[in-house]
Length: 200
Length: 164
Image (cartoon, rainbow over the protein chains, first blue to last red):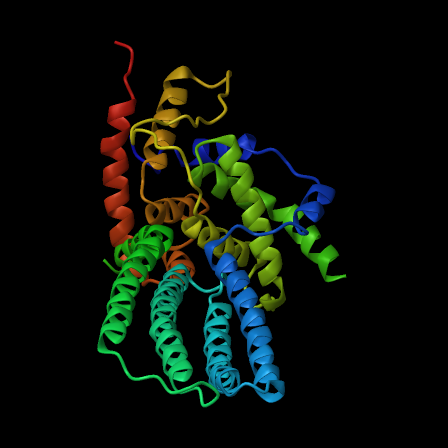
């Protein structure tokens, strides 16, 4: 049996298979939320961007108005970290907006794979970079707080803290990597396979 | 105003979306979800439609991009299970009817990319036009179509059992 022989029958059968939607039904669909992965990532990035802006502003206000040297320094540093985060998130959001469903299928697949891989990579990198930064900075600042009586440096406490940091960091890294793979890994792989199939 | 124009165009060409949903989804709930998703994606992208290409070609591009990248968590089913069927035409010769259903089942088991090729081929798009929608050369389309036709011929033999 050849496809060409059954072309007209397949076409006419597909025409009768459909249930016509009225203009009112189509109009009601336009107000709903999309379920596409890229739209969900855009939504997530917008929320993260809004949170980063709020956090950065809060840090700035605390740094300016607090009397405590520790809080001033901690929040001051994270104000600048927050500003960097805002730029990174904005760049990532802009990249997701470049993915277009009107592009040819191959180009659309390619840009979608790139954006998803960037998102997963940056999510992991930024999350992992923050953990030791927060921890080490908090420890260093509290140890050097001028308002407190100087304490002698203790290698055992320092050792425990380093061990805690290494163990917690390792657990969080592998958990985050597993979680992101579970969410997006399979999907990215499927998209890459389709892109390869088009190139063959 | 733009919404009215869009709804008018979509109403006229909704057959394209139905065809894509029918080919890419085997169950009614899945088709419903995909129809909704394609409609939304087309609406979001409508601002970029400048009228350089025909609306039908533009809509096919959006519909296929959406269907190909559509992610729906489905309960695991054996790869050979297939619940979809084309509506039958009682007046049609049962011999042809069986062939049509067998061919449709074979199309349903193609990859997402091959389904897109078959759909555009059935709509009488030229190889050049198919290549433009998919982003590949006309030669590549020709090679793929030959391979698909061979595969469909072999696959339909699995589903078509003429009464002896």
